[in-house]
Length: 446
Image 1 (tube, rainbow, N blue to C red):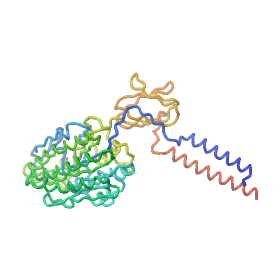
Image 2 (image 1 turned 180 degrees about the vertical axis):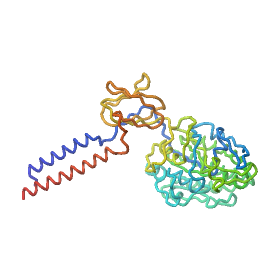
Image 3 (image 1 turned 60 degrees about the horizontal axis):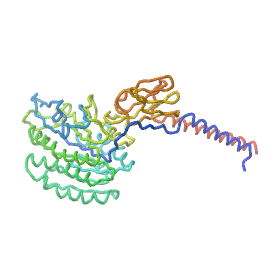
Image 4 (image 1 turned 90 degrees about the horizontal axis):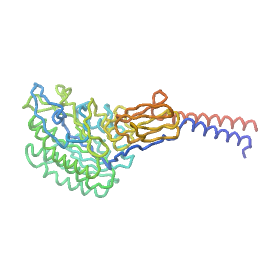
């Protein structure tokens, strides 16, 4: 048995450890919910292959390489509401590469070795991962899914969609995907622009039906439609415009089903389209096309719960889409730090450190919240605007225009989990010191 002296050493060691841990604030921060935060029950990420923002945003105008102005299309169900980023660029205007950037938030992603994706983060938080894909995705993307309906070839006519499932897929998913596999031929049967339009409408309607039948299940679904890109390369500028215009009705059907089911809908593209003239056929990756804004600038619109109705100015990147989507879903993912979340949520988080005692949050003459305990505080669900922080006789103004951090000591706000790291180091040091004491006592007894 241990001696009384050794027991006393253990007691002192444990007491010192508890004091140090509490003084360094290793415990979780205090969360204060200030305003309501809408929580979508799921999300659909729609990627329209080849859809350039220059052709569908009223703020932009598309031009051919020879300088000729090109006619655009009016997509009311895309630009008529939601949170819309006015200038979003893709790092590389190429389908497979761009899809990989989109789901990882990493501009240097290798499509054959994706690394962490939004689907990894979603699955870790209990979400189903689903996809309806017409083209452009490498096998690693398909392997991310619990259920997938995809076209193994890019042929507009004669192709047959292939359904695939993991054991984790819900039982009702298989008959839904089988039904839409059988309907593909009817949608894509017409010739000309009508066939291109039907090709896209098939994927949008299949996605809408799937959303309708996933009631009560949290999910993240990737949808890719491919006929806009094909129309640009095969039908020229006018066929491209007409195929884009045909998206509006099936997009509206999908948006309405998402709205009814409290599902977030994010719409973007992998690249745009450039035409040599008003009558020539288009491209996007060749050297003469790749640097043009018509190829690089893509639409980005978020519709549904958790987002403000606004037009967001500034230059943004495709790498920002992944963190924005996860942020709205309240999912934390170990993606790269390259992307940043767009400030489009209805409510933001304010993290405060270094308050000298009890802290109050005010907006104008109204006190919104108070946090009496010491340590880090996080005020959640704050609408965009100007606030005041009050502690004792001091007051600080803070503008919330996105998630924000403020250190009231005037130092830079701590990043990451430095308090936890410091605490762990101290614990290890104390443990090692305790072992040395015990060893000395034990040797003394010998």
